[in-house]
Amino acid sequence: MSSVYINGASCISVQDTLAEDFFGQFKPENSVPIVKAIEPAYKEFIPAAMIRRMSKTVKMSSVASHYALKEAGIEKPDAIIVGTGMGCSQDSEKFLKNVIDNQEEFLTPTYFIQSTHNTVAGQIALALQCHAYNFTYVNTSSALEFSLLDAKLQLTDDEAENILVGSTDEQTERTMELYQLRHIIKKTEHFPVDFLTSTTKGVLWGEGSSFFVIGKNKTENSYAQIRDVQITNKLEQQETERFIEAFLVKNNLSFTDIDAVILGFSGDQESDTYYKTAMNLFPESALLYYKHLSGEYNTASGFSTFMACHILKNQQIPEIMMINSIKKNAIKNVLLYNHLLGNDHSLVLLEKV
Image (cartoon, rainbow, N blue to C red; front, side, top):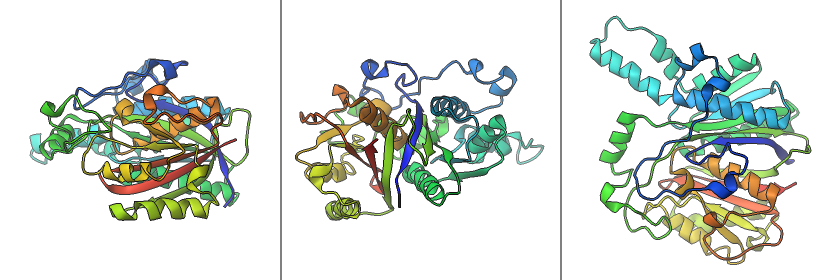
């Protein structure tokens, strides 16, 4: 399967990643259980009457997709593919609350219509008047990777030339409460936390929206080639080495060919063992982590993909992401490894253009 290119990239996260010089403005967070995204001034992009009816994830995605398309010089993509774990959960909660409060009677359909996971892709298509292929993947932490695979297949089969691919997830009050009750989110007394040496269960939860324009042709704005994507739902820790090695062999690479590895350390003692195993496979690579900047959430890998794009384009690694002290004179191959609490493991291989 031939390579495709990332020609536009934009991200809204708990960092100010829409700023021009965001590399030097990172503020790691390790002291609170939940961190919220830094939102732009939506009224600059969305009519005021529409803003009131949009959930947070729709608004974030609308702006992030706008920037990605603008950067790639594309007005209307040939397809729109969005990956999400929780979808428009704010409107889902509002709808369910209405059901309970009104004893299942006299319900308006608005919140239900807006609560479906494909609302994000649909709203973007409506704004762009794009009537092409429109699809949403809901695969917990591998939703973006499935979206990238779909886009890659369409581009290599000559079914499209430029595809808008995105990932997005928002927080909701009730869901965060439930996550805390289930100890998915760390207890307050376990903060501050060191993401690399944590000895407690649970994560710091974030949110965000990342969008990319994937094209079959390289342009002046191209960030990287997408060499390959691999996904598996379940993986035993002792299988980690075989999983990564088989992926590299498939792409005619060895461990020493990887210049930088971006690992999804979340601060969860149990599931981070996969990343510690992976670290030992790359003694000559720059090892990086990022969830102390983005928080953990279903599609946090969108943040790491966005960062990998800028690392490859700028040939520069932010000090705040570095685990070890290895620095490369040239960064050609970047490997991204992510999972969510031990499930849905994904590998993404990006190469410098």
